[in-house]
Image 1 (cartoon, rainbow, N blue to C red):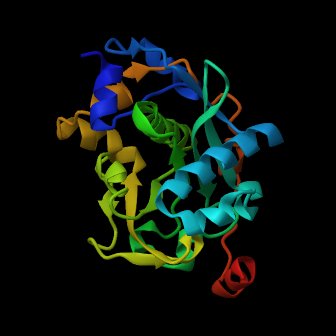
Image 2 (cartoon, helix red, strand yellow):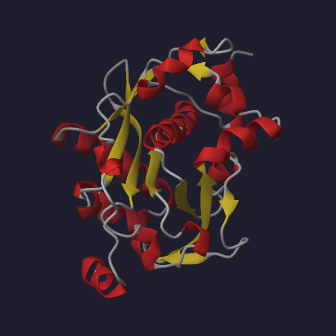
Image 3 (cartoon, rainbow, N blue to C red):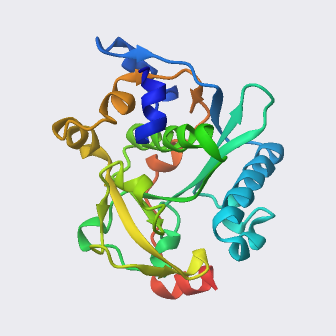
Length: 257
């Protein structure tokens, strides 16, 4: 079985972009994908991301999806980045994920839950609005987007990826051995229609070692495979070179009102 076929069955992922120097590693292999992954830099690309997002949410939470037909304010946030996967065949969107950094304000998930003390003062991002097409292509796209996020975080020296996930979709993050911060407790999230979610976290610097030591089926796909179709070359890493602008709870209430 080829690695890409294996990925579709066990939910692994891929690599590229700023970390192209990994090609020098002796075990690194190269694979092509039927789609590309790039950072959204235009209104056209943004509306493609919105379209696939709304369609995906409509399959599972149709009432909540009614509010996702247009870009959200968080799509334009200074610390936000949106990844978009597009079919090579016709340019149609097949997946997207939004990433919010905590450089300019607290993570949106912190409206609903306090992060553990050991995460305070750390560089962190929140992964939100993960959405993919139906079927086989969607399963591959999902893990590719998470891999692209991981590569971005490695390059930016991000400490933690935080994500809220409602069952059964939480399994897509369990597959990456993310920690459950509340030990299975479901937390209603304000920015997700108060739907109860698990809150999970990936220790970015320690992820590779964790996957390798676990003999995880994702390890080679995540760390030893190079995919030229994921392009993070236009990522803005400059925000991580400036001091974080943390704000207090009073300011947070104003931002999130």
